[in-house]
Length: 184
Image 1: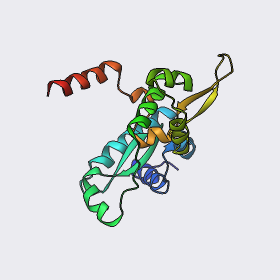
Image 2 (image 1 turned 135 degrees about the vertical axis):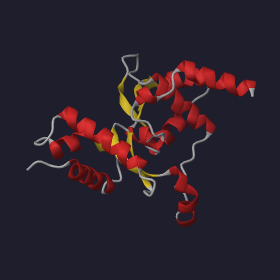
Image 3 (image 1 turned 30 degrees about the vertical axis):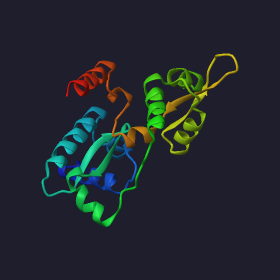
Image 4 (image 1 turned 180 degrees about the vertical axis):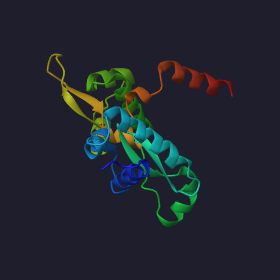
């Protein structure tokens, strides 16, 4: 049976709608491997995202996030949705954000490296970030004492709307941002 593009899009929509977590490409490959090549499935996913996100009457969009695909609510509907469901507030202190940024850009990274960059002990902040599942252990370093290595998690990518770590801003983009802030 040959699937029409409309049927493929319908199946993709159903899969994404039923899942609270991003669906990896391998799921789509499993669904359609008998019908399409890997390249064709990637093209269909991109086309599905493009067409779906153009629907003005839909309250949802499709995004590639955390190395997977996910349906999310449109940001322009936020003020109305907050009247019904208060936000699931995800607060991080400035020091926690510092530690998270260091790990994101230096990973895998030891606690010692984080402490050296910040100039203060960061152990309690590392524990908090692990509890919030934004960072995780990534093995042991070859340094004396074999300290733990930390890296960002899939949840980090989801929370910050990133597909992968390559989506983090470059050092030049960060410098440009701070230059723009100082001149305003």
